[in-house]
Image 1: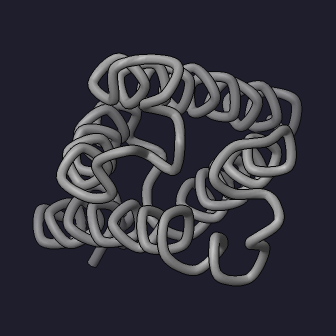
Image 2: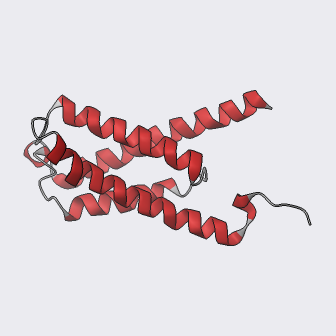
Image 3: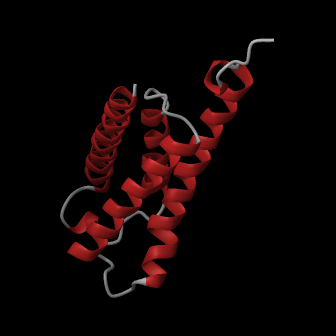
Length: 132
């Protein structure tokens, strides 16, 4: 029997999609529940909180692309899950609502996450071409 790539197996694709959604739900827990408790001096808003969010986005995205899926069309849906969770709670987005409406803040965050994910995906594509 010819061995198929995991991405070509239907069940694996569905499992990786739901795993990616779970990872971004866990990223939400990390960003809004764990990090504010670990670093209360950075929250409600500071450059430290922004850097922590940026680092968590990069680390989670790289880990997801390495071990879950590199299907680019899964990530906007995972971002949508993250944005909806951020809209539901906390409603002030830890002070971001003082500057912008929370809806605008999460849309900006979702777009920024998408841009970061696309950059990382293209880096992985470039590395794949370089190794060929």
